[in-house]
Image (cartoon, rainbow, N blue to C red; front, side):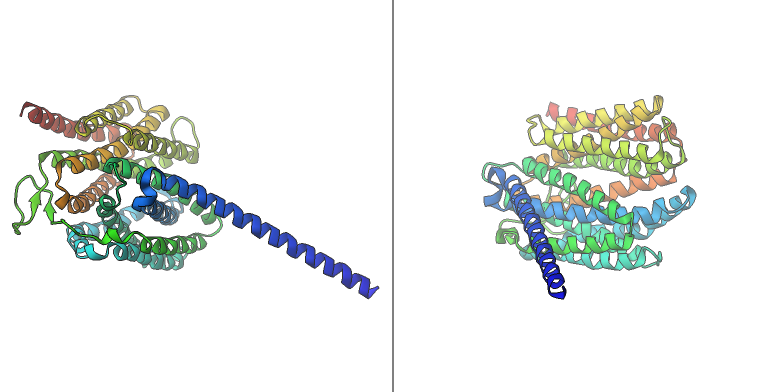
Length: 443
């Protein structure tokens, strides 16, 4: 009897072991198959040979990690407390994290220029720092310890350092016959998709544990470190590079500094307005929809519709940008006009339809505007100073987003008022942009 029972138990154990092994094999095969399909997409059109495919994959990992940190911070600073207290917390977060960043921003570009011989290590370092800080945040979110703020600030600075270094890297990895705007479109699209996936994963894990959501984020950034170090060695090349400024004239104290020209400055100013509107929309609508739901919709549903609309607009803009042949100066003027019109419509006819339309227009305008700015830099800035121009423009755009976000937090929660003020600001920038375009067309 005992021998028979032991035999059955042995058979059951072997069967369970075979089932586990079979499941592990199927999971591994599915993961490898998914990896091969992703690699085919990222390596298409010569990106595999040039190394751009690796950078696309790295940007996807980076954006997923940043999205996971953002979800964790949103759950801590925003959703867990009443609206009035949440506004104070987010304002404090902006003050503690963004104000030092505003002071450090002029330093980041020149500091990263010193890493031009080791951009792969610089990129890897930005990911390693965020991996460590994600682990710190994991221990701070539940207790809401004050270390949450310096850790969040460190994540912000490291993320922006990654952004400017990655922008300086792209020209070194262009496939033969490719353009900078097409390359940035592919990188941006990968970021949109992976960011959405990362946010969804973080939201799912955060439902059970914010701490473990950030532990998983730690792993994501660690994977990014490995991918960064596997970028091609030519990423570190500095052949032909010199510093630049974002001024209209030769104002640098060092004679080798080269001004980027009027077209780039005008495009950057317009993109700054688009980015400021994006920051405004993020914070203003976040509090407005929570306090005053519209269209009889549940707050979560309204949030979801606005977020999805912005994501769709950004995806459409990125897709259009990779195929568009129109002059980038003209594209920037068009998207500014579209967004200004949408904001005016939202102010005049405030409702769920116009709010969703504004979010979609903002996503479309920001993605197409940034791709057009990249194209203008590629067209008008000499290769010798192009990478330095990218580094400095990224910092300007980030600060614009911060300013817009601060305005969104400070305004009264009135949809018509907020959109009216935003539309007025966009209209002023649109007028300046059209004036400069007319002047250039006459010369």
